[in-house]
Image (tube, rainbow, N blue to C red; front, side):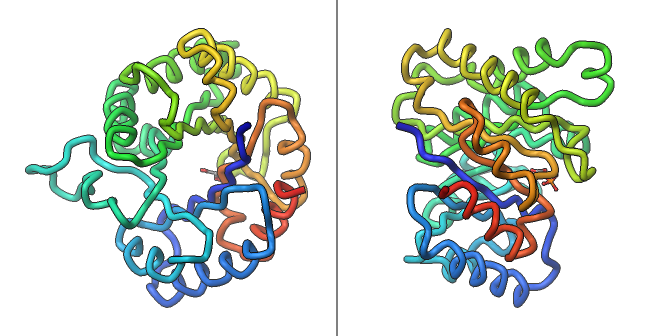
Length: 251
Ligand code: PGA
């Protein structure tokens, strides 16, 4: 059975190493008593080593926010899967901010997901429609296209540790979360596509909801039959908020 995965996406925060360490310490403290969920923090790449060191043995996993699909080479500014070995066990791929600001494409996400799995990293592959796409009734088509592309390089998902994050772009950082019923119908669509591609292994894939998840609304998303976790941005920088989200997931 799948375990809920609650991941904190710190994005380009916090600005100092000391703050990153204290945030990691605070997450470890609030996670310690909780059972039955996987807790992940995804700091900026420059803080990965220190945060991984701080969290060693705490039960809180570390994730990267992106990576390059190649192991090495002339790719200025990039981080390779080999560099993440021993530091991160997860990697967020295809986040809408990278699609929007860094030109990440469906094909690029596919290469990264395949590379992550090949290197023993659990991909958190993010999909989600923009506001204009939602308004024009294209949500289902966008999810279908992004998801099929993201997993196109995988022959099987058994043992891959794959996680899918459904993040409607218009809900990210806006304080306007999706309606839980909408999140459930997209999560069910995602589960259906995975089932069609990979059979019963689809039942093992945690599907997260992300987009303005807070201590107040987390329980409603986590209670949905096809939602097994959350990808949390803003609230993951506030230890009391993140703690409440974790507690909702642990039930
Ligand atoms: P948010 O970000 O929780 O601040 O909306 C979510 C995300 O981008 O993963």
